[in-house]
Every structure is written in C-alpha cells, then in structure tokens.
Amino acid sequence: MGKGSSSEMSEGVVKKILISYAYVGIWIFLSFTVIVYNKYILDKKMFNWPFPISLTMIHMGFCSSLAFILVRVLKLVEPVSMSRELYMSSVVPIGALYSLSLWFSNSAYIYLSVSFIQMLKALMPVAVYSIGVLFKKESFKTEVMANMLSISFGVAIAAYGEAKFDTWGVILQLAAVAFEATRLVLIQILLTSKGITLNPITSLYYVAPCCLVFLFVPWVIVEFPVLRDTSSFHFDWAIFGTNSFCAFALNLAVFLLVGKTSALTMNVAGVVKDWLLIAFSWSVIRDTVTPINLVGYGVAFLGVCYYNAVKLKALKAKEGQKKPPPEDEEAGKLLEERDGERVAGKTDSQD
Image 1 (tube, rainbow, N blue to C red):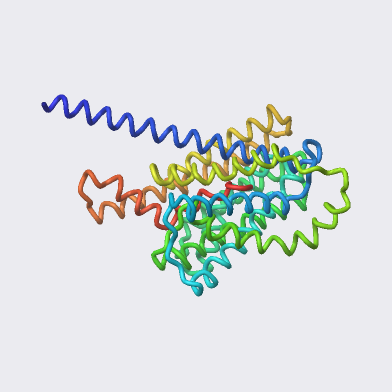
Image 2: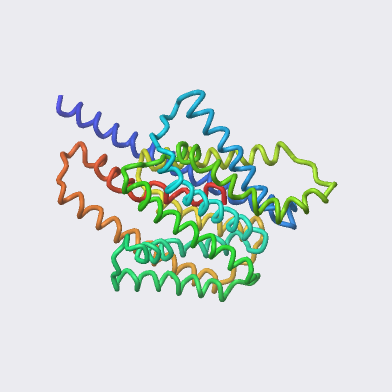
C-alpha cells in the first residue's frame, strides 16, 4: 500500500510539473506572438500602420468587451466589490499609467528593433525598486542598489553597442518602463494594501475601459487627423482581430501561469522569452545584434537573475517563519508571492 501511494504521489508530482511547463510554454508563445505581431503592424517596413495609440485602443476596446462578457454575461469570473470612491482613487490613476505605458511601449516599436527593446525592458526591476523606495514601499538597501546599478550598467553597454540606436525610441521605451513600474507600485499601495487583488480578467474589466477613455484625448489630437486624411487605409479585420485576440489570450495565460505556478516562475520564464526574442529578431527579422549588445545584455541578465534569486531566498525565509503544514507549503508560497507581484508579469500584455 505504501509503494502504491508513493508511486501515485510521484505521478501526481510529475503531472503537476508537466502542467506547469505547459503553462510556461503557452505564456512564452503568446507573449512572443503579441510582441512580434505588434512590431509587424507598427513597423514602416512591414505592415506599415504606425498608429500606436489606435492599436492600443483597439486592444483595449476588444479586451473591455470580452472581459464584460466573461464577468457580466457568462458570469465565469466574479467581479470585485468596488465602491465609486475606490474606483476613482485607485483604478483611475492605475488606468492612466497603464494607458501611457502601453502607448509609449507600442510607439517604441516604430523606432527600435525587437531585440533592443527587450534589452531596455531589463531595467524594469531597477524602476520598480527605485519608485518603491520613492513611495516608501521598499526600504533602501546598499546591496540591492548595487545590483540595480549593475543591471543599469549592462543595459547602458547594450545601448552603446546598438547598431540602429534611435534617441526618440529609447526615450519612449524608458518612459514606458517608468510608467509601468509606477503602476505596479501603485497597485501594491492602492489595491493590494486594501486586500483587493485583481486577476487579469477583472483587471481588464475595470482598467481597460478607463484606458480607452484616457487614450481617446491624445488619439483625437495626434492620430485621428492623419487617419482621417489617409483615404487609402482600409481596416483589416483579420489582422487586427487576431492581434487583439492574441493580446486577450495572453492575459488569460498570465492568469493561469501565476495561478498554477508563481510570479517568480513567470519572471524566470520572461528571461527565457527575452533571449528567444533576441534570437528571433536576429535570425528571422534580420535585426542587427552586435557582440557589444550581447555582452551588455548578458551583464543585465545576470543582475536580473541575482535579483530573482534574492527574492526567492527572502520568500523561503518568510515561509520558514510561518512553518505551514507540508501539504500547504506550495499554496503558502504562491499566496505569499502573488500578494505583491501578481500583476508584474502582465507588462507584455499589449506591448
């Protein structure tokens, strides 16, 4: 009987591991697809539709509609009880930052290669930590700041070695990273601290319509006059429909991945995805990736790995203090980690 139960247990563990890898694989594939698809649509040498605000609004409109259907019509996901006051004080500023983050990150694809954008995104932990310290959400530690400086140094080397360096594109991408990092810190301050956690579906249900409203003003001023005068353009339902569906499917994949594994698994998977994108950008899109690029990104990559390792160690130390029952260990770990980081992996959802 003991042998049978142990083999059943090992089969259960193997099944769990295989399912986790399947979720990681789906997330990497969808994240990869959305990034390359957005680049294809926005790049002047490809589909040549350089209207990032319009593309982001199409995504937000599509995601708002599907989230509404899932929450209100099919009732597959429970809405979060939220007062008007909480919505205005928490969701609206988060929505404003999200719209700016998506607008600027999508705009960067017009000017920069996919590989270089992934290298610049390595600065995300630096931005999150710095803004966390600024908002007194994180305590300043010299060793952590040294790690952040090493990541920044690596990205600076990668930028120095970039063959098609575009100042405006770099400014847009760095602004996108800053807005996204501020949004993640505000989620912790405004929502998580009040015991409210939004999964990707409820997040889109509340935030996506808000983003749509914020994007409407710059769209009317910047892109609408150009689109109005471009009589040759015809809306391609197949291209924009499948692109928006991929963006929405990515949000579902985030929900499954963080729910079934952990946010740290997602961070590690994100690093794998970045290397795959750099390889794809170099081999298929024929972007120039220089040796200095790779050395710089390698330094930043090691810094990010160290950052993740430190977080994992801190997480295990917390677990040790709580001493949960053995069968609840994994659940305890996931709850701890999801508390502050659940939304961290969603930064690629439309960019």
